[in-house]
Amino acid sequence: MRKMYMCPNHTKGKLFTFCGLVGCGKTTMMRRLIADLENDNQIFITKQPTDFVRNSEIFRTYMDMPDHDSFDYRALSLLCASDRVQHVNKMIVPAMKQGQLVLSDRYFYSCLANLRARGFDNDQWIYEIAESVVQPDIAFFFDVPVEMAVSRVRSRAAEKNRYIDIDLQYKLREEYLDICRTNGGVLIPTILSEEESYAFVKQEVRKVLNNDEC
Image 1 (cartoon, rainbow, N blue to C red):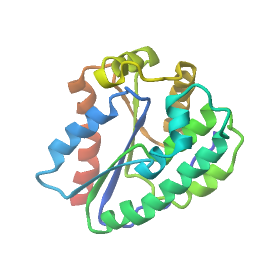
Image 2: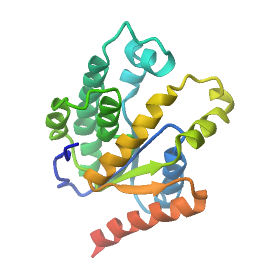
Image 3: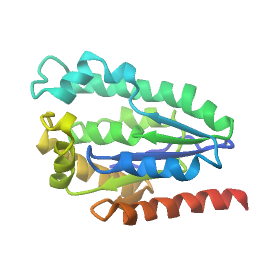
């Protein structure tokens, strides 16, 4: 695993990214942070990949069905990487130049985690493309045992029958942990209570914002 080198943030704004397994609690943590920040700050809330990719046939096949024979995963990864570069440089960076705090549900790290978890751990192009996106001020990684993550997803009425590749989730968890360690991310254990997990998030964000005010 190589470290990902991204562009330094030279804008007035800040970028906080949230990555982890489906059911890891990142959406809940984002919602809590938004509620704390929105009264005193301009906030731009977004997600990756964008709906352009999420609604594509190749993406939906990999997310919703066990049979992926019609598509090459590397093709999907390249599509997602391209979408992220466009989204970062044409949506996120302009918002940051205006001094906004950007909260992104997933980021380029998710692209790397999925590529490696599916066996493409020797691909180097992903690291080259990473140099074209901005470095987050805080890269949060939310960690929870796979069984708990899946249970949380299944407890949602709309997703109780959702297709989940369980074996892939175990590989993804290990990749996220490795990416977090290698890239100076902030690991938040969400096996704790919501209040305990969020306390860690709030603490890290306050460090960045307070330092910016000094």
